[in-house]
Image (cartoon, rainbow, N blue to C red; front, side, top):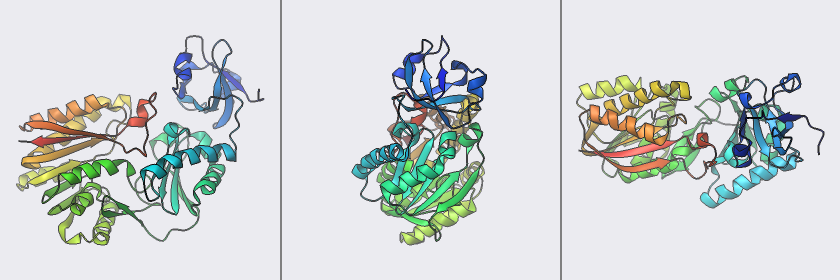
Length: 396
């Protein structure tokens, strides 16, 4: 056995869940004596059950509610350059089967065996989100492994967001290596999207919606399309690429809408594309007052329920989105509603959406349910890894 520190579950902690693949240990499940509390955030330890049986190698962060994350079921494993490269290579093998060009989510945290690590690839560039303390502490080694496996020359460290705050980490987005000359063009679903890897939201583009963009585009031939919370034009540009008559993108971010306009221009779709900046709720209310009607409306808001304490408020917000969007759908048209809140399960989100449609006085058929693409795999034991839901309705 290695000489790493040993941490131990409390007698009543559920070791069976860990043995069956659950990757986290919460602070109230662990014996947190003075030695454990003194461990540096991001360090490694061997995890044992209450009887002293080995469970695996974990990374420890005493300041986080998720005090330990499983790194390897083998307690003698070492987190070296080769270990990291092996995990990244395994992740890349899946993506190479799924996509013919290197634009995708390369690593999806626990589901790809790298806890708290997100890596999105944009051709010769990649963005790493080190959302766990171990990844922050070993970022240079992680970036080296990424370059070794993929050959990318440009790496951005995106250290922003709620997950890092929960880990006690600061926020910082920097160019780790290489160079960037403006936004990166990304081809998806027949359209060109412009991804700002340094200044955009998240990693610059939401690859997780690729399949849902494609489904919405199947409904869009000849349609008038409204894309609310559009970011860089996700649903709007995909719809136009598949023959929509027109598309209006609504977002509160002027920089995001400028990237959407650039994407429309690069796609040869600018003549049919418009934008409207403002609060999405206010814009939908204004469009209703103006008597606007669309054949396809899609709303992809931010996470209104990022945690369980925010669930009730978040579900009310999703219901409100549906209530305001439904009147904008022409009879026989389609309404797509999305949630990226892991705390809101599919049933709760679907019910909130249906309530909002009903409160708007519309009758609906549920025609499709979508999730994140296959480059965003789910760890079956961790519900949080399957955060994205999309429901599509046909309205009378």
